[in-house]
Image 1 (cartoon, rainbow, N blue to C red):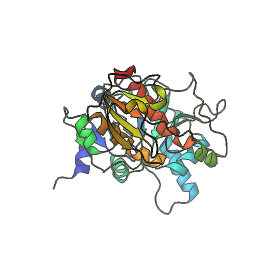
Image 2 (image 1 turned 90 degrees about the horizontal axis):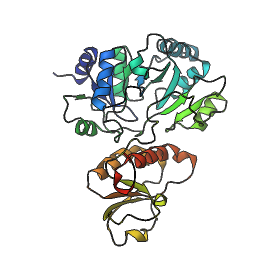
Image 3 (image 1 turned 90 degrees about the vertical axis):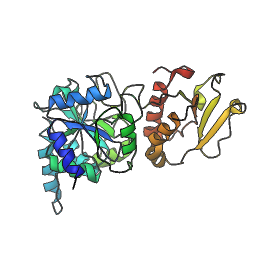
Length: 343
């Protein structure tokens, strides 16, 4: 009988690409130790070669291990990819892995420049998905795996999204069902601890407060030009081809936008500017976790319905909405040019 896992392993070992599920989004995976395989990711996604990839690594801890044994297992695994593994990395790995957190560390000599975008840093993550963990354990190596979509477009959270995105390719997709987190991992930089401390370079569903509690020290989200380049850090990203705008982001409503998706929270009234338009209303969930889980599927659905404009309610200002806000701001910036956004 055809075994999808064995087929995926065969393809990856042969230097081919395989789309894999994680708890965040589906990834376009290749053997992180094979330069030619990694180059195929950039070609398939039309991704700039200086945009680094995140390496997904297996979970090294076994049931019954003591805390010190688990710590040693993480240290041994991380040292294969990073030349400097600070105590903070081991604490965060022990607390949040497998899970939606990426650590930026100084890369080991053997890590390919194709993976790091020619930087001296590498992003590492252990995903919390049974299919991905099984694959990584059997592969016995790291998989470079950015989101399985064309560069800058909406990330995929189902196997069907991936197949639609790469319908022109003979791409194997391991179907692990819908992603349970739904947006990309939190990225924290640990390469400048002595001067900056830990710095969040991309917000995600693991918050600054959670990391501060684990580390018992302050975590910053103040980014600077000295920070390493990381995935998902461009101002325009995760974007539909349909124009998008926030409720508070338009000085005047564009007259040419006649067919509009009004995407709002419960209780937000229809804006007067939409009274004379053809309006489809979409009511959002009231928790950031629920919205994150469904965000990209919603954007993909709306993008396929030929609206002139996707008009978004403003998000709450609380910090727990930061990760979803980050994705939507970048999506608006990268969306179609119908209301003045640049692609």
